[in-house]
Length: 297
Image 1: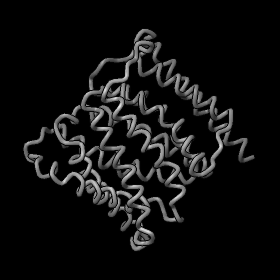
Image 2: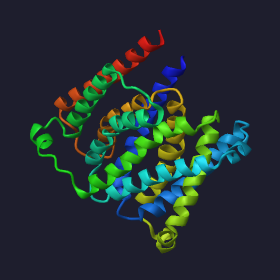
Image 3: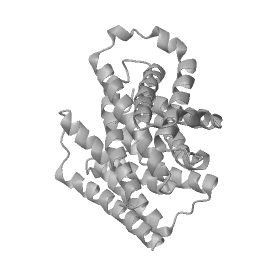
């Protein structure tokens, strides 16, 4: 398996795990301050990554080299996660995942600004197909719902977070100095945890942790283990092997995964026409894969 294929596989798993945070996050967002929730998730995720680093014989002292890099990246990703939960207070999961599909184009823009990565016409066309497919899925194949889309407060807040997410992807490649994905992830998580703890200290103290509903703890455990620790490693891994726009292209699969999560949680099943959109996102990804094969020939 080539490094490129491994990068794509990592992002496929990434998109499925991220989708779960939308569905669960919407159920917990109004029960706890976003900063407090994310401070705890970053600490728990840091602990999980620490265990993984020790188990694999990693050298943690590497994190002390130019540690300012981790503070920069930790700050950027902290903004994304906090604004995601702020947005989910008022915006439904499918609507926020619609906003999330804007990140590939944003990542391509920042990839050019920071790394001078150039998006080929084929890649741009594939991203457009993926975007159309994702929007078709999000709005359940309903033309009227699609054309009447109005951006609410929650969606607007989350869009700012998505800008941070798009900046983060090329910044990983720019600031990484050859550190393994686990080590680099640990540094970013600890830095983010420290920043969120300092910034959100008052919210942390105000939170009645023992009185939180069970769904909040389920969400915290999930986002810490699956949507933080695991996805951080996957994103770092893929960002070092794929161009920024192609890393973020996998966000187009997130709405499809969100629908899967919604079905699993007992919510409405989309109509058959919605799966046309799923097919379009798969076509877009196949185009991206084929584009990379041509570039590496």
